[in-house]
Amino acid sequence: MLPCGDLICLSCFQTLLEPQESKLICPVDKETLIISQKFREKVQKITKQQQELLWISCQQHIDLIAEYYCNIHRELVCHQCVHKSHRAHAQKLDHVVAQDIQEFCERALIRLKERRGIVTDLIQEVENYNQLDKSYPAEIFVKILKGIQDELLPHLDKKGKKELQLKMNRKANNDISEESMALFNITDDHEDLLKEWIHGEDEAGNTQLELLYKGTRDTFNSSKMHEMINDKGPIVGIIKSQHDQVFGGYSSVGWKNAGDWTRDENAFLFSLTKKTKHEQYQQKEQALYFAASYMLWFSYDMLLYSNCDSNTSSSSSLGTTYKLPDGIVQGSVEGQNYLAGSSNYSVKEIEIYRVILEQ
Image (tube, rainbow, N blue to C red):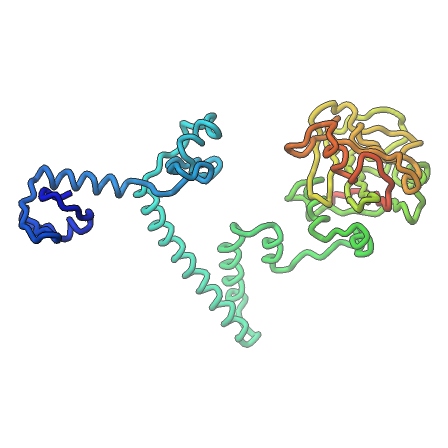
């Protein structure tokens, strides 16, 4: 509000106020006003406060301003969220004002434009290279290769990183066959994921799977299975239930006829259908059970009976030794059905592989 009682916006006030004088002509009634230094300072203070005010609303509380940034969860939240969801690390949250957002955008634009320039140059180099006579110095291509990898690799997923290898690794002879992949309804990505679960991302490329036993080929008899997989080193079993759920287990100590509970810190269960790995979290002394009259037995979380293709005695119920998915309670229907589709089931196919780590 001007001293004359008329209302104008702050932007108009700054525009109409003569820079060298404390004089302003009211745009409403054309009255000439003398603006005191105190009034001018008050307007400057209001302007500064407006510039600092953040107008980003909280996603959880739409009527509140999201003025705190959590670097741990990478979220902008309001003061209520700070106390409800970020109390444990509240002191590490940054209080953010509009100027912080503006300055970040300015810095980000500079970096993004720099990166755009680099990527544009690389695209041009690749296009030019494709038009070159195929007789050229190696350093030309190596420069392009290094530039592309240096620029893109830090921002790609695992599949993308593989695509930027100069020579992509081909499937090993002893890996899962195309026929088995079709039967289990899985892809190379599932196989790669399984190998990463077993030996980690760095050694996944050196991990091979050699088929030892196949239910539909060798019968679903437990004695036959033991004959073909016992004492062969680490094994992984892949199972397809009557519900078309694909799951299984890994044993780093292999399989035996011992007839006793066995500890294996590295054993785990998994669902390839859901792409989840279930490690041990309690009662690890009963990770595995070896018995000639049974097939695969992982604690009481997964148990395969002999002739599991023709009966529904086999069972699964995560939570005894192997971790449940987040939000699922031990003993619940969801926990019992998670791996196979039901707590008791028959098996359409099972394949057991020897796991080999090449040095």
